[in-house]
Image (cartoon, rainbow, N blue to C red):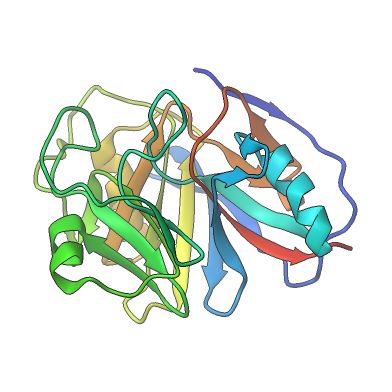
Length: 240
């Protein structure tokens, strides 16, 4: 497992910082971070000097705004050069195009989906996203979908022996909440999807990645490190 966790000493963040918590579901440990509409949630990939690649570099770049990261996690699959595999929209600018064809790997296990947000949070199956063409200030495509309108992805197997540390996001039906989850134990897709549907009661959820899954949660003294990342999602608050 290519992960390294270490405690990071930070200045206190704004009182509006996202609070993350640990929980247990069906005997496995998870960390959950909930973001509500109105918070400054963004996607991050590159700056003037190239791909950020780490939470530390994103946090350093925010200093120019007088801001800091409150929470962050990797948010979608990427190529060897760290470019997004599918659709990626950052602050209204489309950096990578939507992919709707099936293919190898988890991303190509259709249906995959898009996490789209601006004033509200949405997760749409990729082909439905193409048909609707919603206006997203930020969007990242990944796959597979975990929960689709309250139903588990039909190709997820409850007895699968493919287990990894995994992370993803689910959204509330009214679009006012996005719950980001990372497993602290190795779990299969079916178990991870059940977390969103059965424990969190979220009708739509999207897988971000596995094995390289990482979390930045200062309130838990958690800053996962490892190989450079591609797309990253995180909330921004005034620096304390």
